[in-house]
Image 1 (tube, rainbow, N blue to C red):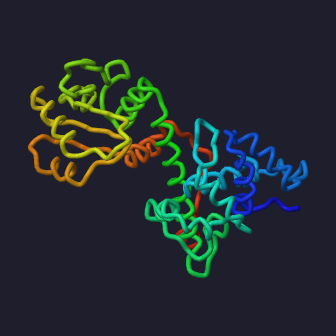
Image 2: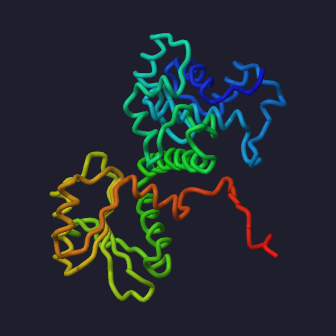
Image 3: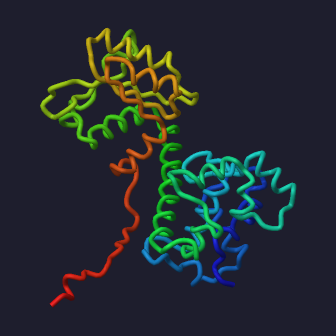
Length: 303
């Protein structure tokens, strides 16, 4: 049979995970290749970029969509398990699980609309051409979904990282953004206890004309105004004017309103922004493929 599209893969994948055990992506691919009776040649077929097998890519996307709908959950790198919601779906014995089916879950709809991408009648990850969209619009929408999925994976990895790795990536991100001097003096901790809530400092530029204080926390709950006020107070205690507060969760509206009104300049970076900045500066991610969109050079054909 032909290689199934990623939506056709969803239900067999969910059934495979239905035993409630943790599974790796690799063993899932191997099992589903047998389920769909793929030939050796079909298993080796590559994407146009030549970087990945087609079926592996489709299984990966099926898992991502099921994860975004809350039917699967990632347990560790390249491993996942079924959720209670996923088991409930299996008990309902659906004929097919696809994008249309997953739209009944609020989390999946939020994922689809993330980064300003818009859903269309035919899901663009399957059909990249539509009567309602130009090829350029379809390409940009598909790219937006790729990036949204990557950002979610990046943030999840950050949350699972060790405290030392988290501290390292914060400093390296600020370095890549142009702050600090060398890696050696870019960021330094200034007290694990009695530090008035300040975790580190970094030079604003290579010459060190000003210092920025950093607080980075892997909070799960929404960060409210009281926490931001504590950081602002700590800055005043250090006679500092600038600070960056980073969280893997989000900041409340009151917290953002507060920093807009105080004298000190405090930048709030939430989990979504952190993941975006890491992608923009190639921290923790690497390019997989590059596509150039070209147009006619009319000047060349003008005599």
